[in-house]
Image (cartoon, rainbow over all chains, first blue to last red; front, side, top):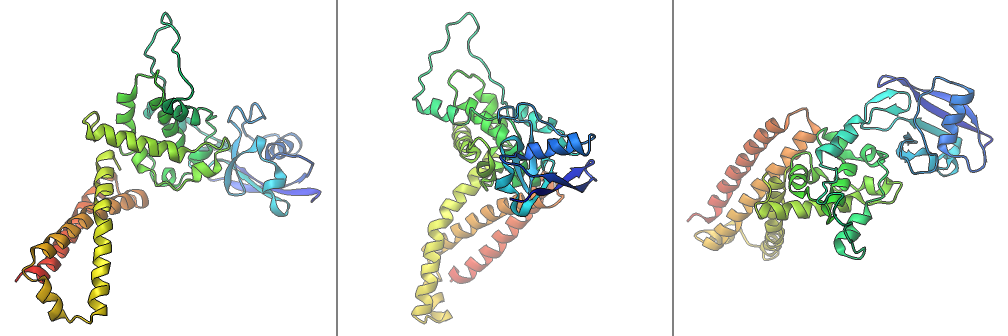
Length: 240
Length: 109
């Protein structure tokens, strides 16, 4: 093991630069530990996001040696080949400062893809009885553990090329709700994801699937949306 | 790409898949049998079947390729979606015209 890590961190906004630091290497050290070491011991002005440190909140994603990763659960030993780390902000999102990105567009696209649950019952109705072994519920459960970290969005080539594309996370959320039998918003949702920024823009490169820290499969979810929107269009339920 | 274009592109791909296989088989047959241009034309001229086969092929290619080019232009150039669509229509019409001319050259008596 190298006793010192050579760490390059992105500093500044969109027109910033990488700055190199030397950070002590330790056992079971995460990338977030490295960033925190720099902020606490070398550069207190360094800006970055984190909250839970245990892979639940989805706020600490950064670009680590060229790939988007959740830094709190990414061990240095697995990604720092030759003792080198290059850590930057997530791609495909505007940089606010250093390692923090403006994620508003990411969440706005969730809204555009109708990623909000549309209830069909009120609080005075009985709680819906949902069998966990139905195909629809299995499809909904497959992606329910998304933590909104933005890694799939940063990894997506189509997002990079097409600024209107909703991205894997928003479409996966839409597929979860399409599959949720309690939801009543599928008319508007299928219409939203059938447009030019929706599921049919996906090229199935599967970077989202490869890099999702929760091992979800957004490509499969988007394929499900493609099938459902095609069926809805052919039945005249949505328009192009 | 919206759902309508998606369906057109997938449908034309489904049409082209068997047509490509037959087209390649025809090429192999013609070359292995040593058919001359005159031999080929004697088989294709006046043939409604070959006219329909390659006419359908040209139509499917023109639609399929135009939709693909539209996506490439929209994603890889600064063109807006509307302008990329216009360029793609021009490209598709060009393919249809050139393809129809080629089909006419081998099937018209």
